[in-house]
Image 1 (cartoon, rainbow, N blue to C red):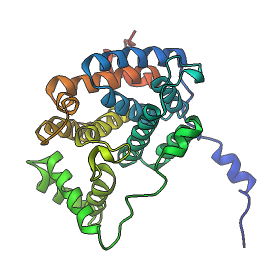
Image 2 (spheres, rainbow, N blue to C red):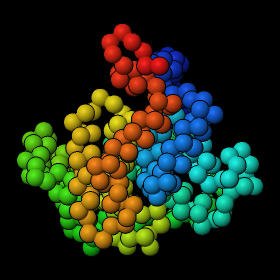
Image 3 (spheres, one colour):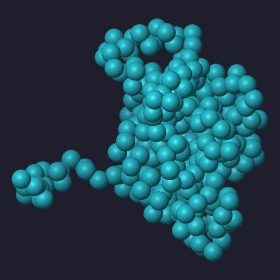
Image 4 (tube, rainbow, N blue to C red):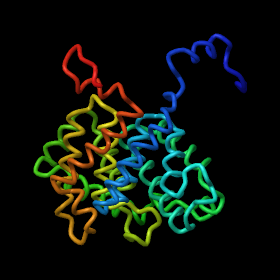
Length: 286
């Protein structure tokens, strides 16, 4: 028997307990913090890192319209004027980076929020940008590439978690024998940089992958041990050979602190309840 409709009682029940994403924050306030943090990133020559962390922070906060707002902010000279969008190549690159950042976010904060944010991004981008984005998957696993993908996941795992990589692997494997295998495969398929470097549309480097984890987990809140692990992962990315000057700075002590503080600045607008935890007991943060 085909089920075409929810029973009325179930439909009513599902309407309870806040099923919708959080309300969109004040867009003028969001524009202000995006502008100030972007100008800071521009001065430090880390605009790609800024776009990655801003995407992941807004996705995790689960206010999907902010993703489209970020895209418009990042690609236009005047936010409300579509005619001021800069060239196709720039808009396409930024859309691709945002899309890839969102995809990697699903490892840290799950599929549902990723779906909502990707849907909003697709609704926002212009037709020429939509037409220019890659349409065919390059992550399909088959008998010819599965060993390469697993090796890529193993290498990323080691890069992030050494000198505790083996101990942590065994610990997670003790929780469920398939859990660690799933993680390694996800690291190899999704979180690792794709082979091909900058020639791959929207490809995100090892350092930026750690920024995805740091931004998502900082924005999520309540996952301190995992956040600490991925902040260490970002710091360790400074040892990756052949990285860009931007990636190297982002993985320095100063750069890593900047990443966390910039995530917090955006969060103070879109998820202000987290900031309350910074104030002394009984005192709201002003």
